[in-house]
Length: 323
Image 1 (tube, rainbow, N blue to C red):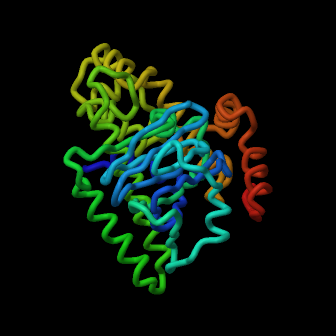
Image 2 (image 1 turned 30 degrees about the vertical axis):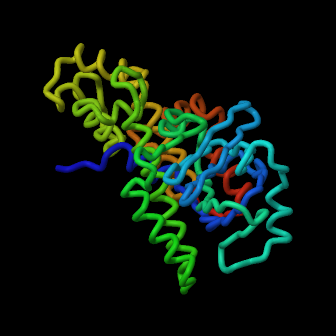
């Protein structure tokens, strides 16, 4: 049986909510400050034409971006995009307020000099960022560089779809743009994984290992099974000691500890997104009694499952009939 890979499970558990901000046409001189409005949002920028500089103020880091480059800021960092670090900076809100609007989801600003064209978007992660293996494994900043001065083929194809949707602006346009933004994020993650050192302990790098990647898929797909180090090793035709050592080396924690973490991540998702009763959720993630599940969840989340659910529903104004 072909199992979904663990990255697919994680992406489904965080429920990306994407919004393509659209295209921006900047002409030199220009410099725009993008605020940190929401710590739970990530920002993505792709340079389609020209060049620009990205300044991360908190890190005092200045990065040069060229046509074909893609950057992802994962923790809502305030930043500046500009044609030159010496150009006068204005806030994005001011640019939007006075912009000559050339069309849907398009922004034009600058002094009339050399042109830089960008596509930008935001991602909001639903769910628990604190314990999510993917978000813990990713850096605050991902920079996917072009190698030839041209767009990477997969990036070019996606951007062509985005540009087409923005131009025609038909019914369902926002939904299509949101899905395409998801594609950009997933491809950025793939590109980051491809550049990771082979010997680096990282959850994403572990996914690329045949045996450990399969073990992660088994844990993710069947969290209700009574997995042990021995039973997982048997599924992979590995010795118990070899499997445990390699898993710990690549993932950064022992198999049973990771199993517990994933069970709790999955349980938290079910508490937020489903109407299953607490004892039913506990059974779905491998606990035979509601008491043992509640104890494990409280140790992990700091609050009991019922309180966790009620707090989430109250914060998001959701009514529930679950008990």
